[in-house]
Length: 229
Image 1: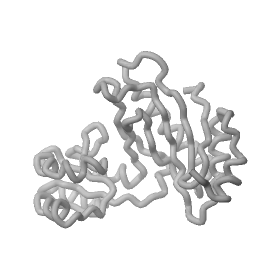
Image 2: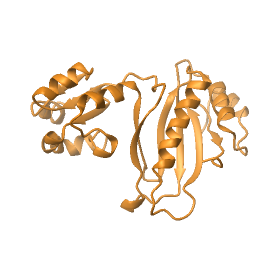
Image 3: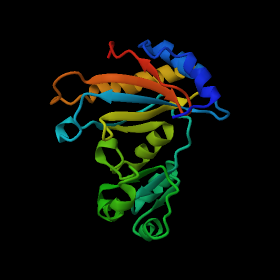
Image 4: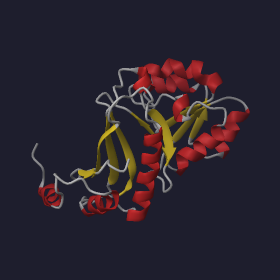
């Protein structure tokens, strides 16, 4: 893959053989963000889990103390008082059964996270083929199937992110924006790592965290030492 001049210049700042301490890695990632827009800083965590086994799956959510820097649109499936609760908490869209054809037939997907009350999961389940592949299906482990819709919406708006293993047993999550201060990114990174470390499956034998790489949207990867985790 051929990279542009900016990427090549940024890549020269990074020593691929070095495992950097967190603070140094974050400083370096900020330095390599040279795009004209405010790049997202991402963490890619390679684990020793085998996601094919249910007991080695990792899935959950964590509220990043400084948010992600991105405005998140939330859709809530609920009924009765819960609709008002969700609206008051700042949900962008609320509704029930009437939203199904809009999503299924019209391809409406103007939202980033879906929250549902447990009694609406029968309805939401009909959207599995649309929402599932996009990672938008509500899930109790991620706190998006709940009766407390107000808290779910507030947490998501405040910077709550979901993490889970992909097919290669890697967790990919946004940590914030390149315009964040080093302190803000470090706080977010530490909050994420605390959650990931706590999520270690008890069934796992061998090394849990194989590698951690931080990157910006357009920048090179910076490897973080996993020793302290």
